[in-house]
Image 1 (tube, rainbow, N blue to C red):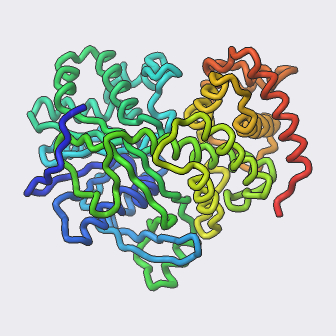
Image 2: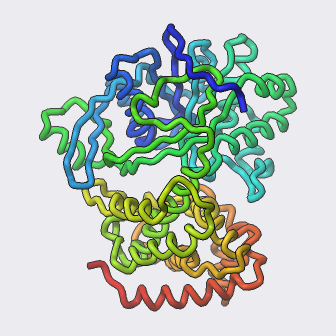
Length: 470
């Protein structure tokens, strides 16, 4: 681990974030804005996109609004506060060469680069190493200026920092992958090795830090109703507001090689080891979120709060009490209480998240959020029936997708990595599903996994047939 630095430079420092999504603007940008409100404005945000993605229109409009937007914060009891966020001082227009983004990333004043990467966006294999055979990685390595991944963009920035002696920098993950900083470091090192850039590899050994972090705040997609609520508040000059729940958490390993904002003043927890916090969050909140979305889709519900029937709540409570609590070592978090709080947060109808959004990218979510608990429980010589309920829900969800009867279009960036058409064309589709190594990794070869899952699928099917959205 690099030497941590609590010092804040006396001059202005830039924090570059890659990705203009709603979560960043409800979480990291909000935290820095809270620090600014205390009078500490020594750090400011620059915001840009890697790809010409769906958030491009948001970025463009945010540029027209000079980085200023409204954050609607909703409590579990339905109380609403409106915050004007002014922490973003530079909005970087997207272009295919990312020239402005790279220039700002390589500026000596830029001391911190953060990003939110979906689980599949790391392109890591089951063993944690970079998948150098993935078509996206193959293409980007062959054509480095195509910028299809976070690795390609970071390499471009770091190469320029090395060439201009711009100084060390912290790379900060703000996403749901466990050990995200360590995973980034592994992926980035192996990407640079594949490029054959030994000078950059040697420089990175001493000039970057990659702390692990855990982030949490429910941030649903914005809609017309949000804009209408703003107009009712007399706010009619903001086309890109964001809504979120009042709860927010950010836990970071204190490993910042080039200084950092004093975010502990506004509630960020800096710790030596983030693992106990991230494991609780990933296995309780993230896994449950996915399971609720799959169950809700099977029940015909559109949103998470509508999906929380008594049966679905019982499935989630059993999953945490029977398997997660046994799979994890004793830590600083009361998992039963955390589960109770999580279900309460998910039931907030005023922070309505859709099952379509939460169920997206479920291949990576299954592998990252759920399979670790299954593997541990099998290693403990237990049949993890409560966790198998979540896998059964996803099997039935994907079965509906194959039949074209899901209530929405399922979106998954890793969909081509698993041969679902072949799986659901098999006479025994459950066996093909359970024994797909692309999906289940080493669990596909477990001697009882297929039949354990088959038994639970039958139970879940029976229960769903008797259930309805109340």
